[in-house]
Image 1: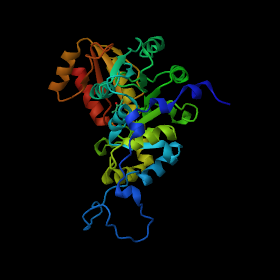
Image 2: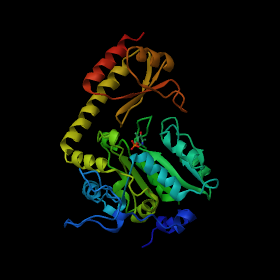
Image 3: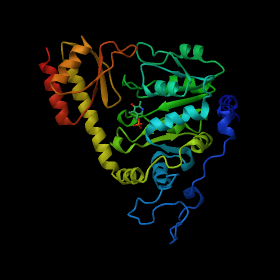
Image 4: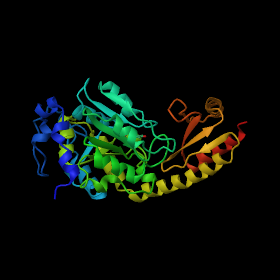
Amino acid sequence: MESAKSTQFDLNRLVRENVRNMTPYSSARDEYVSDGSEKIFLDANENPFGDGINRYPDPQQRTLKSVLSGLKGVNQDQILLGNGSDEVLDLFFRAFCEPGRDNVITVPPTYGMYGVLSSLNNIENRKVLLKRDFTLDLDGIFNAVDENTRMIFLCSPNNPTGNCIPNEQIEGLLDRFTGLVVLDEAYIDFSGKTSWINTLDTYPNLAVTQTFSKAYGMAGIRLGSCFASREVIAVLNKIKPPYNVNELTQRTALQRLKEAGRIKEEVEVLRTERKELERALSALDYVERVYPSDANFILAVVDDANLRYEGLLEKGFIVRNRSGQPLCENCLRFTVGTPEENRLLIAALNELK
Ligand SMILES: *Cc1c(COP(=O)(O)O)cnc(C)c1O
């Protein structure tokens, strides 16, 4: 039985013509993959005097993907890895949006990179503000959609507001929107909620991005991931730079993924600390509102964001002033640190007058 959604969603229509027609770069390491037997590699003009990083990395990151495939419950051909999720997001623009013609929808206040990447790629960014409770304005979104709307970017838990977007709203979009819904789950591990990755088989128009930069504690190695249908992943794979995830990054990620227990413990600590910080912020006279958070940061409304930001800076704490964002007047965003950092922050907050 064909569902309404799958008959409406036509991936071929979304792919840019130049992308559809191009021949991807074929690297030496694409052509021959070592089968473990001893071979002499004279195909890629590498320096043969090796200490382990003289060779180009696997362009398809097969070992890493096989581990992730088990962890996330998807096939390896449903995974794309990038130099941070920022690279993955850029690939979406380049694969599916014709510069100067197409548009995307973003829902501020949200992650700034969606807007930056739309400017960079000369794609119109149609901003439909979240409602005051930071949920989606579905009517506003569908009013903004036209025949050139290629993607809608959602972030859940959302940065900087910290809340998850209600499931039924995301479902509402997936059911009706015939372009791609790109759902950024950078903070999903702090939320205790299930990932939308589990629904990829139901929604051909869904792509989920995640990152190793937050819960997994590897912002320094630059590794982001995307999970989608095999067809969507194949398009992104076709246009990605061949060696976009370097050897050291692949190795470090593999190593760290073996420490699942430690990652889980760290996330638990951060969730407990988040509660502490929430409580401390709520008790302050100059804090007018503390938004509930499903992430590893807290957004709070203060009496005067610039004043409080400067006050904290003087005491050696750098937080994020989000006042410039719509619906975030006088808002500061606090990342949850170690228990020790958190105690010091709370002491400093209590000293501000
Ligand atoms: C931090 C963050 C990311 C991570 O980006 P990387 O390039 O993977 O480090 C992605 N999306 C959101 C919303 C973020 O806040």
